[in-house]
Each structure stands twice: as C-alpha cells, then as structure tokens.
Image (cartoon, rainbow, N blue to C red; front, side):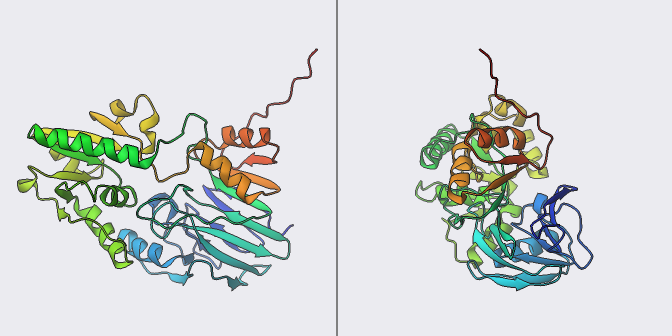
Length: 337
C-alpha cells in the first residue's frame, strides 16, 4: 500500500498509512489524527487529537466546546508526525475561505499531497489570502464545480447590498441580511464598513466576530441585536434562528440572503426573501480550474458539491481526475465517421 493511499469513508478522507483523517464527519477517537481545515460545523467533530490553525482552535471551542489534544500549527511552518505506519510532514497553508481556514500540504517519501478543504482564491476582506503549492496529488472541494457558477466581483455585489439597505431604511423598513454567523457575516461587516450604515448583528454573529477581532481583524462599529431597538438599523442574522422567525412575524422588514447559491434562479423563493446576493466564501468554477493549474498535480480527486461534473471538466483539460464523494459516469470520446 502506498504512503499516500487515499480512502473516502463516512464523509471524510482517510490516509491509512499515515494514520491521518482529513475533515472527517465522524468522531476520530482512536490513536489516529484528524486534520480540521476550518471551524464550519460540517468540517469539525469531537475528535481525540487534531491538527489545525490557532483561529480554528478558538472558533471550534466557541462553537462545540469540549476537550481535545490540539496540534496548533502556524501557517507555513512544517511539523513532523509519526503516529501511523509511515511518518509524514504537514504544513498548513492559508485557504482563503474564512479566518484560519487551512489547506494541508503533506510530504512523505512517496510524494506530496495538497488537501484544500473549502477554499477561495479571490482575496476576501476578513480571511487570509489563499496560498496553494504544487503537489503530486490534489484533493479539492468542488462545491460550485459547474461552469454556471461564476461569481461577480465582490465590490459590485456589496454596492448592490448597500443600495438595498439604504432603500429599505428610506422606506422605514428594517433591512435584514441573512448570512451564516461564521465567515460570511464577518465578510459582510467588513464590506459595509465604508457605507456609513448603522449595523446590528445577531448574538451568534457577535460571538464569532469577537474572535476575529482577537486575531487582529477590524470591523466598522456594530451593536448586538436588540429586538426592541432594531428600527433604523441594518441587521445581519443567520437564516435559521429563532430571531429570524420572530423578525418575519414583525413585518416592516425587507429581507435578503447573502450566499453563493444566489446564482440559482430559485434562490429567493427557497429562502423566502425579497433579494439574493451572490457573495461567496467558496471558489467559483474558474477559480477551481485555476487551482488545478497552479498545483499541477499528476492526479486530482474532487469532493462535495458537483464533484463528478468537475472531475469530468478537469479530465477535458488533460488531467487525471476522479470524484471521491459521488459515483461517476465516465464520458468516452466518440470515434464516429
């Protein structure tokens, strides 16, 4: 078995020879290690021992609590591990997704591997800039792995969000921007900084933002949401909270969702909002292709989202590619007359 043998099991990537899991969905309780790329709930778990960045460690503690053995690595500094059958060296590289999000660059005697986790090549306002490296093998997330998902410039989207908020306030309506409490909400806060809008945030957004501030990120003035004093303010709130449900009952609000899925025609109706703005902390299709070109691997493995579709797109570029997280129907060239 090769040092970099890859298995996909229960939603996570397993490197059995190294005794290492990459973003496992299940709890890794035994002697093996779990690499946690970032603190979103679909990438964390109550593992016994983890490898992660310092911001991810703080955000995980705030979100899920618990005790664990933490191997906290600074970006760019390699660390040796020898818990499995084959020793390896792992370096964290910024992924550009949210604060502290990391890619794992793994080196063994058998070659190199880059695991991206969720990433974004486009520079953001609240996260580190993505820094990929060349590797023999590439395992990459492909959430938006179809050509239709090309995101407009963030500056243009933020201008439209500001226009939406000002229009609502002028009509004595409360503009409510639904966005996830970790990552998207901080990007929104930073993006609205020059607009001069009065900002309020849901308590879960405030908790995450305070950790961003602890690590040196700066935001415009904001206050915690007070249901009795929301009038005249822009409210940033997660979409699936009791506060969101209460706001909808109050009336006199104008709602919008901020998500990459806003590129889908039915997004407004799915979220039951008046507007949808395509601001994403994931790579769009062209950035996914660019990541493959920058890493220049001999083989690509795709994960999540449109994994099979994107693997086919990569094969059409001349790379060897395979979807890990879903079955594929391979397209063979037609040699007709």
